[in-house]
Length: 188
Image (cartoon, rainbow, N blue to C red; front, side, top):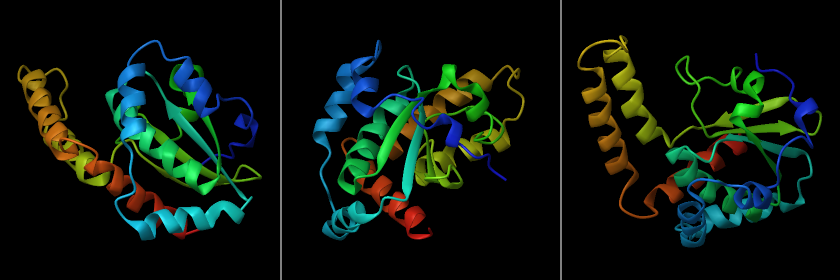
């Protein structure tokens, strides 16, 4: 069972504060943000329809050094802006106790997008990557549980390259993120 996150409301940064405070990867982050486009009008319309809902809050666990944050959060920001959902960013290093409730295969991986009601009850979460990309890392970790193995570093480099290819050359993953978030939110 996920914890209640109400105590973290109003403790994070606004999306703009997060971007302005970035000490790494700010230019790449802003580039992905500017490149976002709605690939599917029905997804855009769905998120626009959420503007009347005032019962959802989002906390995003993130860190500016993380490539997946730089790649995924700009799309998440755009999607949530369209939906009009109040969004705050919690810096991973400042909120380890929250991160430890949203581990990925036992490890800390960001971004994690936490959806809660206004009382802080966690309704669901997304991240750290689109499922088709994350499945590559899941498979790698299942096949390579020993981080001290002599070939671990070369194998993880291979899977990271494959993950980069799975993201695609451009903004293809943004449409996937929109679809995955739509599917998640439709459940609450």
